[in-house]
Length: 80
Image 1 (cartoon, one colour):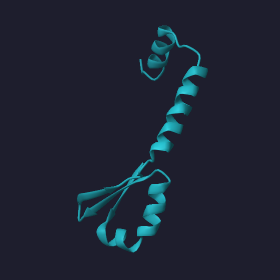
Image 2: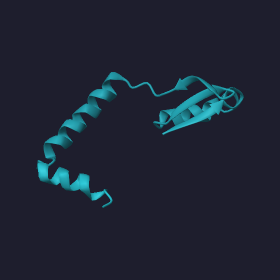
Image 3: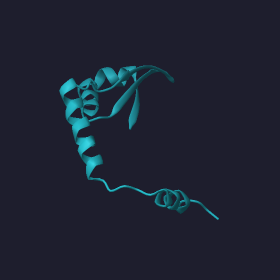
Image 4: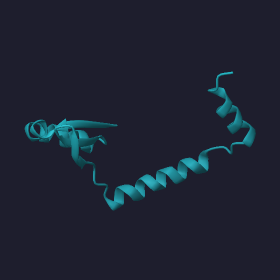
């Protein structure tokens, strides 16, 4: 999720915005209605390795999905 703030608001609430970025949110800073900068979290190499290991482990635990199941899920949201 991202939030857009104007420069003056970003200057006044920088600590709060940084806390939101650390929590995973993205902050766009605009001058008027023109976006000029984006604040996003910097992931450390170690964090990425841990995250990738968790994803791999979850994929190994997941049961295989058949083509019919995927097609059923696709049709589930369609209107007839």
